Length: 201
Image (cartoon, rainbow, N blue to C red):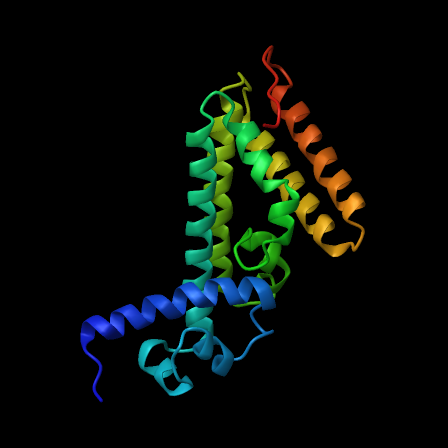
């Protein structure tokens, strides 16, 4: 049976959404096209009608994952406008986020994989990193820092590194301590030069 253009477009979006989650859980090379398409409720044969290659899907799925991450940052900021950085830290450096393999930060879930991919996938990650840096730059810039970009880079690196470490150890108490220590370090960096240090919600 022939699929309408509308249905084909809907199927394509479904595959991208599912891939963005499954890639974060399994890695780019940890899941094959058959299982990806099965996760989307479609057959493997339908893949090449929608995408040029698995790398093509990896690029689109990476962009979608960063879109989802950006929405989460925005939601946290909007929910706590009085302390936006604290709000971002509260969800990002949380044990709940540690467990969110399919919905979590794409840099944490796929960063090492992306480093081994082609330039197109890396470009998707570069765009996502720059977006996060822009947001953090705006947040720490409000503290009166003269060089928010440098501080934003340091803060984002701390956040990502802490979440990676928290995920690779079995000891949940240690994971929690790592995340808490990172949050305190970020707040100290953000408040340097400001009379109004923030706090994690």
